[in-house]
Image 1 (cartoon, rainbow, N blue to C red):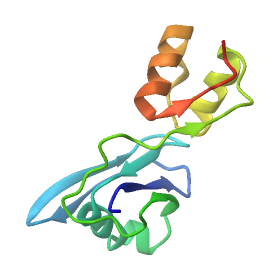
Image 2: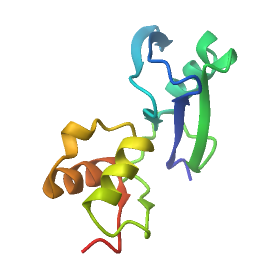
Image 3: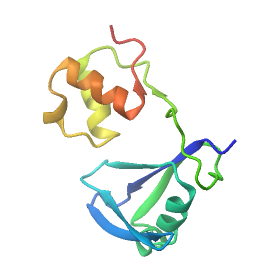
Image 4: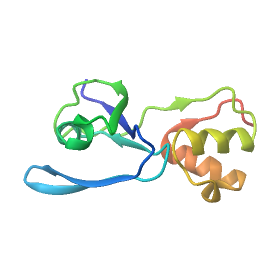
Length: 130
């Protein structure tokens, strides 16, 4: 399969910004703000994160694995799996989900169109929000 992703988050609520080395090159990892989630689709990057001191000390934790848990190297998921929230029926509900679960600043999604655009960007669906 090889198509999937892993979600990581800060277990402490503290912001973490650090570098990991992938194929000899440094890559910047950023978990900004409480509730922020990092979605990783590259197996090498996931391994680098899981070998970091932040992960080993449980400051950063694996929240979920979607699709193939053994992501294949150099295979990037082209279309993100969609997380659905059928309980969301209005913009207030959507803002709550996007801010608490995905760490989106409330000021970025004050309007309905902004919340819908951010949800689409994150692969989040609200099927009962009309």
